[in-house]
Length: 387
Image (tube, rainbow, N blue to C red; front, side, top):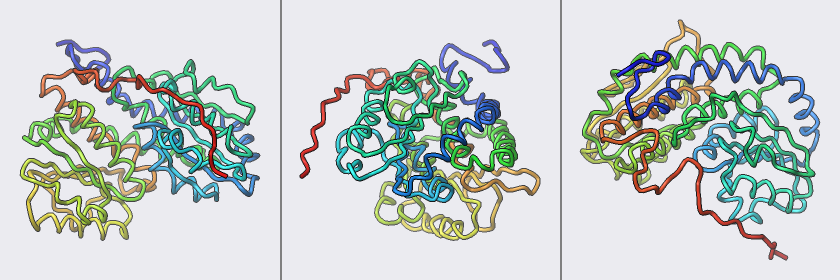
C-alpha cells in the first residue's frame, strides 16, 4: 500500500477514494470560479428573469436529476418563478407533458459528461416545442455534447473545475460540485456573503471525512438493505444516497429512499433485521419535530438492524445507534446547503462496502449493466400529436 497526495490507495477504488476525499477543496474552487464569472452570469440571468411567463425546469439524468430535487425551493424563492425538477428521461419520453408553444422556459441542465443521449435531446425538445427557451448548462466536461450544444435560444454554460469531472463510475465530486453551483447561481445576488456557507461546508465535510473509521465500521455491519430518509431539500440527498450505495455495491445492497413523513405510509414495511436506516436530520426545528416522530415509530413493528444519522446540532430526541454531529462553533448553515455535505456518509458507506464485497468501487458493475455514460439509448424524432 502506498500513499499518493495523502490518499491511501490500493488497486481498487483509487479514483473513487480521491474524488470523495477531494470534495472539500473542490467546493472552494467552485466558489472561486463562480465568483470570477459573477458579472457575466448576473447580466445573463437578470435579462432572463424579466420574462413574466417564465417557468424554471431543473433537469438531468440519474444522479444529475436528483440535484434538482434539492434545488426547487431555493430557485423558486430566489427567482420568484414556478420551478420544477423533471429528469431528462421524463422530458424525452413525454415532452408534450412539460413543454408547450405558449410556454417560456428556463431549462437548467446538469450533466457530468454531457454525453448522455437524453441531455441534448431534452434541450432540443425544449427548443422545438416552447415559444421561448433560455438555457443554463452546468457541466463538468467542456468537451461534452451538452456544453457545445448549438441552439438559437439564449445559453449560458458553466463548466466546473477539471477535478469535478469524476473518472470513477459513481458520481461524487461532480454531484456535489454541480449542486453547490446550482445553489450559488440561485442566490447569485448574495454571492459574496455566501462564501461563509461554503467555508462551513468545507469544515463540515472534513469533520465527516475524519470519521472514516466509524463509517468503515458502519459499512461492515451485515446489512442487505439501506433506507435513506430526508425531507425538503434533503429528500434529494436521500435519493442520491440510495443510488450511491446501490451503484457502488452493484446491487448487492438494495436501497430505498423517502421523506420522513412519507415513509410511514407503507414503505416502512421494507424494514427487516438486515436493514440499515440512515436519517438525514434537518437543522430546522419545525421540520425536526416530524423527524423525531418517525424515529420513535421505528420502535413499532420489525426493528431494523441499525439506525444511523447525521445532524448539524444534536437536538433532544435523537436516539440512534450512531450519530454524526457537525459543529461550527455555534454557527449554523442555511438548511438548503446541508445537502452538499450530507451526501458524504452514503458515498463513504458505498465505497467501503464495495471494497468489503471484493469489488472495485471505480468500476463496480461486473456485468456491465451500468456504465459511466449510459449506452444504447436511441433518441427518436418527436411529432406532437396533441391538437
